[in-house]
Image 1: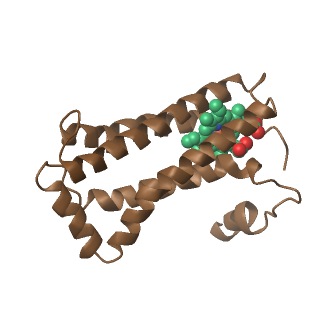
Image 2: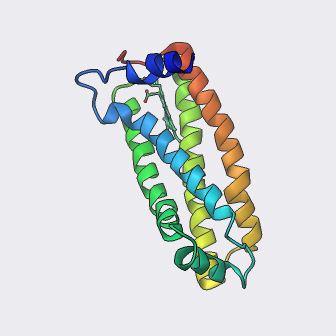
Amino acid sequence: MLKELIETNITRKLIPKGLSWFGCMGGLSLVAFMVQVVTGIFLVFHFIPAEKEALPSIQNVIHNVPYGWLIHRFHAVGPNIMVGMVFSHMLRILFKRIYRHPRELHWVSGACLLLLTLFMFYTGSLVSVGYITGHTPMRLVYIYAIHIAGIPMIMGSFMGMHFFMVRTTGIYEQL
Ligand code: HEM
């Protein structure tokens, strides 16, 4: 059962000839998002979102937790790569005019995902500015809550809709 599932969905699926990097950017955006989720969950176990304890808690992750420095680095560099991927994905859709009927709502849900990705980037930056300088526009714990729970929940539901729509219409260029 499991063997058959893996074979039909992974090992027996061949990469078609002529598949471009641009054509992979939607899937790669999802992979980048998953990397952020997994590394973020790891950081949640160690980070203390209080003005005085935040910086020492991050220093503890970097210096004392096994591979903490690596996971922290991944979580900090990943968003730059993800934003680039989401933009490339959008540009392909735009230049190939894939947004036209019947894919208008794919485009709208995608545009919301782009905004949410940028909002994640912004709140994540505010959290790091908060623990480095001790100054944030509102209390660190509120920004942190928006960053780790508020936006990801909304993003998860928009992704669900985005993928459901893609499954319904099928992809534009058949593999
Ligand atoms: C976190 C952000 C995003 C993720 C994870 C994501 C993921 C995906 C995936 C996996 C696909 C199916 C494979 C493909 O055609 O590439 C797809 C298709 C699509 N996406 Fe996105 N996407 C995101 C953002 C966007 C944005 C910003 C737009 C445009 C404003 C967009 C518009 C579309 C459209 C129109 C399709 C259908 C393409 C087709 O039928 O071939 N997406 N997306």
